[in-house]
Image (cartoon, rainbow, N blue to C red; front, side, top):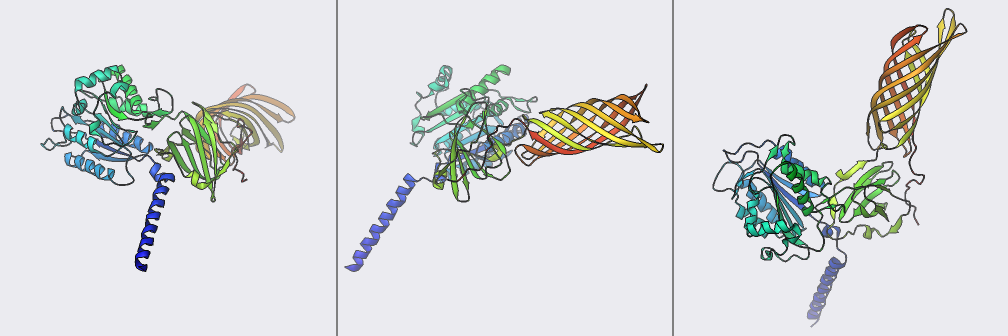
Length: 542
């Protein structure tokens, strides 16, 4: 009797624990479950069958740049390059097996670049085991993945659409607009997977496709990559959908070639799926924000471990952003409005939150890698600069001058006002020289997180006044040469500065002109003028 009772209690306990675990999954979803897991398979072949002309840019101009772009969009990318049909099938088989394992793939993208005909892909030498369009269509149909996209850049790639229905009916639907594709009932091809599901295929052409020596890529893929940089965002909402990408590519190709892409789609969803972000805004994050930083806008998520004294500008999509910060076991949050085409800055108004809340993301969020980060250079800032050092002129015995300059710099331009002086021994006496100069500079500027480099040329005109045996003598100096300057930013406003210039001076003393070599070496400070007075600081604890 007692053992039976114990077994009953033990059974009820396990049932209770199981129920508690299920409730935990429902009400406290983990970050891994919420994440949109994106996987891409890219297949490319330059040669194809023996009689096919060799493609020059299928890999280096199409597949590899597209693979790199997809990685920056948060895709796990698998590639099959210049391999045969067997390797193609093995890659599809691996995707099928991976789709059945947890965490489950939620978005799959397939891309092909190479030769094809009206019935099969040309991957390697011609044989009777090539991957056919019906085989590939079956692969797409059976994938238990919520969203599937296929982008095909090959001759006759539009023939794959015939595997899903009547081409005549499909052309009619395309003519009336992409949004009218839903009446085509092919739902029996897809398992029931909830609100957001479907398959969309972009084919580059129903007949011929071309690559361009000017683009060093195929014409279709070139415009595809250009559209993903942001121009394909037709409604300016910061998100690029597959329909917007197709519309952009079609418009651009119509301008230069008769090649006409086609879009086929069967889908069911409440909101348009964002294939890629359109970086239309910037978020400045200052050097005093330290810790694990998480920026969420729409369904996009950027994560960065932020170090002290490091400032950067993050390219983001416009909209309402939520910024979470975790440091030494404590968490804070603030919300920022990111206007289109403008830059926003973090404020001092942080709210303390539970760290568990900071780790929870909405379902379907896309984690983007750190390639989206940009350093925060002072390229658009006005700088006030002070330098002091030495100058050597080879006019008279290689005289050394001491003095300094005050200057202004903005982007690639600068102005300097300098004052230099020296004492020169002459026949048991000495005389002094003073040199006033105004110089303009133009050059190339490269900025990093902590370092700002300038390399350019300068042209200046000045007045030389020398006191020889108490008889002042004045002349003009025209100076030209190269300039190099490095600013090391140790504060958001102030940088140590080192400056080196060398060139020639054309000097007029009396009625004669002399041309001679000179150089300057100086140290100083650069001060940024146009930052707001309210600087970003570490959030104060309540």
